[in-house]
Length: 391
Ligand SMILES: Cc1ncc(COP(=O)(O)O)c(C=O)c1O
Image 1 (cartoon, rainbow, N blue to C red):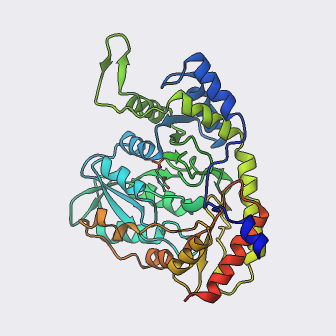
Image 2: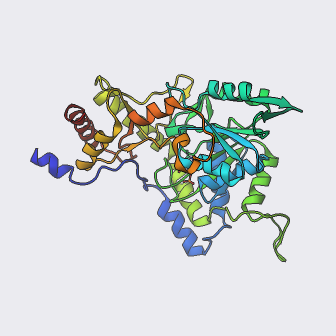
């Protein structure tokens, strides 16, 4: 017991960056050459490499994932006063990006199997509360246009996209994937980020690849890519006299951070393999526990297993979280569902019982790329102990 305590006196973090490749070399190159800001070869290379990895024709680098989503929305023609359907069970940035565009997020409940946006709920909203007028879907009671749908691929798992794409076609919606959490996941053989009109990724501190902060837009539409690049670079059309043809944004990722991104992306296959290994460790260590449902992986795709999350069959997450925190093991519940967020309390939000249920019982557990097998064993042992000791 004493040796176990010594071995694990340090915090086992939930999900931290793994800097193990060419990051120092590429950053040094930026510093040595002075190319640190928003122009430079690493930004272009990061975009090119990222488009290759996501099998898209274009990628546009941004300062963060929220800015990438915001840009994608306005690039796709989401205007103030529009509605955008979005996953209810997500980090608030998905909804905030819609608000930043002046539109209203309509929160769609999760499905119980893989915890992603439920296409049937989206369909019910469109069929029962909206009507088609001149080829546009109009929300009956508010008169607002439903312009887009933003499926969020949460925790590393892909959304079941075919029903979403079918709905989008029927109701004339633009599809903007929030793929910030699921780089490397696939749907029916295609990478997430390549499935809708546009997509956004994040490289913040806990994502699978990190640039400290950063984001990327992907698309297969050259006109949309060009417009996104224009908007993220202050809509400048003439560099000598500084002529801008509209009010743009200063959203471009800087070369210094893109250098980190290029190095991180080189390691993506190894990171994904490690996430798979961590998944198999937890399956072996926790799979037969009657109180734990392992993180589900949909048959329609492959999961990036970004944030390994279990569902406690009989327990609320909080006492387990507190017990593990007392053992220096960092865990995290799912986000407060958007329909319950004080930030969105002014909206006439719909019931989302599945999100509430999942938020009550799900807990993300340590799964950093540098997690060791003995740390995973320690997490599993303490988790099982928690389940016997707390109610
Ligand atoms: C689902 C989701 N959407 C959007 C974002 C926003 O990304 P960023 O933090 O890079 O702005 C994140 C990550 O934080 C996220 O998890």
